[in-house]
Amino acid sequence: MSLERFQAVWDQIREQMARAVVGQDELVHGLMVSAIAGGHALLEGAPGLGKTLVARAFARASGSAFKRVQFTPDLMPSDVTGSSVYDRQAGDFSFVPGPIFCELLLADEINRAPAKTQSALLEAMQERQVTVDGVSRPLPPTFIVVATQNPVESQGTYPLPEAQLDRFLVKLTVADPPRDIEERIVRNHASGFDPTDLSAVQAVTTPDELAALQALARSVRVDDGVISYVVDLVRRTREDRAIELGASPRASIAMMKAAQVIAASEARDFVTPDDVKPIAKAVLRHRVMMHADAELQGVTADERIDDILRAAPVPRVT
Image 1 (cartoon, one colour):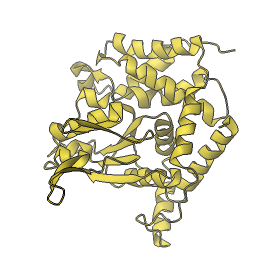
Image 2 (cartoon, rainbow, N blue to C red):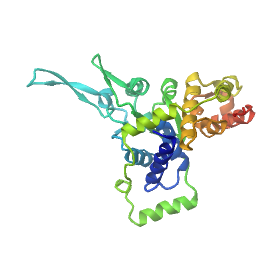
Image 3 (cartoon, rainbow, N blue to C red):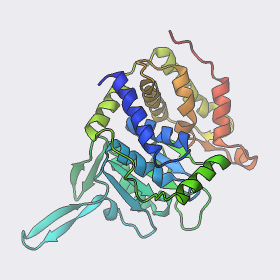
Image 4 (cartoon, one colour):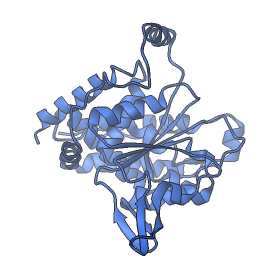
């Protein structure tokens, strides 16, 4: 795998996704960075903004086995992980795999399920394995979770605990599209576009090659100056007066991995601070807890992260 091949596959995936997804460039870019960095993505936005469509389009373009679970208050952990069922002919219990045994799991409206069911994902997200009845079963090496949630609906929802939020490499916020983009979307539907039919999106890579892309991204050089810059950004979230709980070292690792992918997508074998800045908010916004006083004043996590990015000295990379 060469950097030129990495860039070519990257561009091909974006080109294929553009056949189904209009606009939402930041969402598409963030999801691709997260997936190739080997991390999970949390997509937050109002209904109807294309979160599910983006996940399905990426799975199809990347050749990943795709499963979708609609999270509801009555969803049980075994509905996600699978369970052991008694086989009368064999006279023994046999394991029936759940939908989590795939390469891209879409956890739709994840905050609608209670903590007991949400916790079923923790082991899979962290260790890429599922343990049922004392037996651990591995998941594919390229396994990722793409979860969606509605930021404004609170009735019948269960907020994700900090421990689970921290396991998402990025949190991508999905905003309403500009007028011209919305007109293009409506025009496409008027011309017969069917979001349930993604036959126009072709697979341009395979899970094996996706694993090779992940390995190449991990080999991109990160100089000590960039590492210090990443650590400085994360540590400043712990020292900010408006932030009650700052990001952990896991955030530093996630930011570095995401920056490596961005560098590789531009066919570079080294990371610069300019690779860190575009992904910093996506990596940090769900890992910081604002003080109640700051929230009452309308201060958001994104605003504080922007201030931190402006204040942190940027190193020179030779």
